[in-house]
Amino acid sequence: MTLPRHPKKLLVIVAEAELERALVQDVRELGAQGWTIQEVRSAAREGVREGAWESDRTIEMKVICDESVADTIAGRVLSDYAPHYSVAVWFSDVQVIRPERF
Image (cartoon, rainbow, N blue to C red; front, side, top):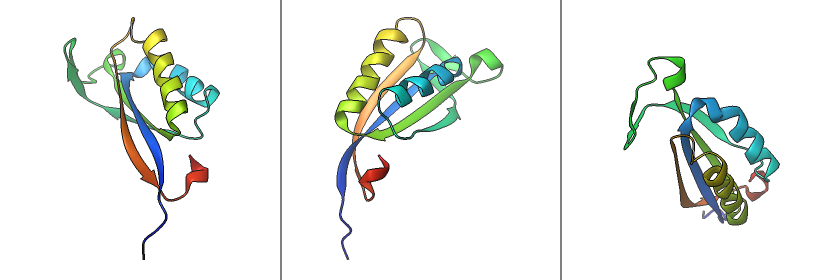
């Protein structure tokens, strides 16, 4: 049995944890129906973020949504946060089984 699949975009944002509340507010305001956030460790050109203290924590936010919503959210992140914080953003194509949830 093949289940019906529906194309969506997975938007992944890796950012300093202090942005979590602002990011949640933004994705909600810009049309995402849901998201997942977890704490991660990371390293980038700016250095290693080991999470050893509160101001050194990093989060990864995943949002599955329509491409237009993903583009709008990514644009906000890049314009409002990337100039001032360590932020990485990327997209992937995904397929979902229950599109009304996204």
